[in-house]
Image (cartoon, rainbow over the protein chains, first blue to last red):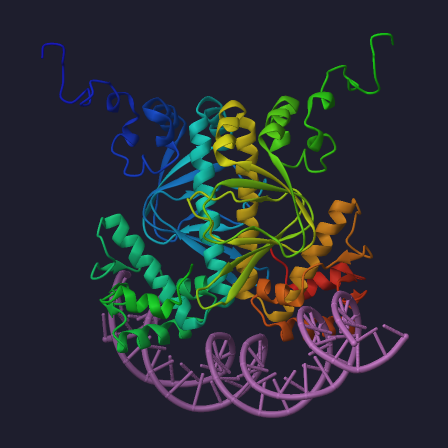
Length: 254
Length: 254
DNA sequence: CGGGACCTTGATTTGCCTCAAACATAGTGG
DNA sequence: CCACTATGTTTGAGGCAAATCAAGGTCCCG
């Protein structure tokens, strides 16, 4: 192959691509799931040049409630806690963002919630001003963003059902089952059983997510352990021996 | 004006427009707020031809949880109750759609909730298959839809805070205040005080929205009346004498 | 080995739910 | 026009699930 002056500069179809991507995009694990991958290699390249990679340590803030809506973020690695505060200090955790999640997709000029890293986190940051120009050029990117926001809305609606109508036991079971299913899906496991599920957030975060108090969450974890619904491996990891049984306690959701 | 062969066939800029719109779009009150108005008169015309107007009576269903995602709906007139059911019959009302709201913007193949008319309703129905072609031709429409879905997501997040962290009194106050503000905004009033606010939904709907029981909602209404926080005009209309005071009971939300 | 953050467990209180019944209001048919 | 029913709303009394109050335990890190 006399025309090749280096290894793997063309992919198996003979098109150039990886070569022309910004270095921080080349091995990105969420490219296909994220906005950047929606408009082909050309779109990814332009997106990559408009974006900036950020690394944050645990407890560092991505943005705070009330900040101006200047950037969109794509979570690449780690977990981010999204929360909304009442003026008197009460706090609701809206959800936990994982790789592939989009943050900051607000319609208004102010962000309605805060985003704080729970674990070390890598995010991709793009200014809205640049993003709008990208969307004009690559409409599939905007479509992808719309689909992601729609999926977030559906998740929010599921959680409204949980908060409004489920008991403490059902809420905790729903939460653990959701984590386990997500973990199984991202690990490619067929069923959520016996996959060790990481639980990086604190009991306080879980309580604030489920509309409960720390003590109630802790008691419910203990009860589930006693009944064999979960098998904890330290306070921040667990297994689900019988997915079906946990789903029964969770009360379904369709 | 010898070239004019009829009244008002050209607008004040001299361009043709109303003339070429489908008759059901000509006087549409939500055109500017909706998806259809996002891409100029040309976009509205194409949207109007792809859409079908539907009139529904109270209690009639727009769509049901589990239905395939085939159409997008734009509410033109009336109020629609969005709800999500648990298999055992418990139900959470996710929200109440009013003129301008978009329904059926789901990413997945199945609808995650039901939509039922509370009052007589007029909606505009478009098949997703046609809508996607419209979006390809008029990207601003897709942008508008994205913005609407983002706003819905933010509303859902506000409601998660209400469901997860507020007391019964705060929930009811938040709900009534929200209705009053929306009514004042749509009536063009500067403040929500003294505008009579319609309350078309039943106590059961309100309870199912706020994660409470009917009795609790009714008791709280009675308490608010006694304290002068609201002035009911029959069970389905009320006034807010002092917006500030009601907002105090609502516990804020930013 | 001391200090602090986090988690678990126990005892008690309470806000909302549950159960129960009376009271409106509207529609129906005699 | 008025029983009669169905549907929705209000009010009352008592119970319970989760909050609150209060220790004590565990883990990590300096």
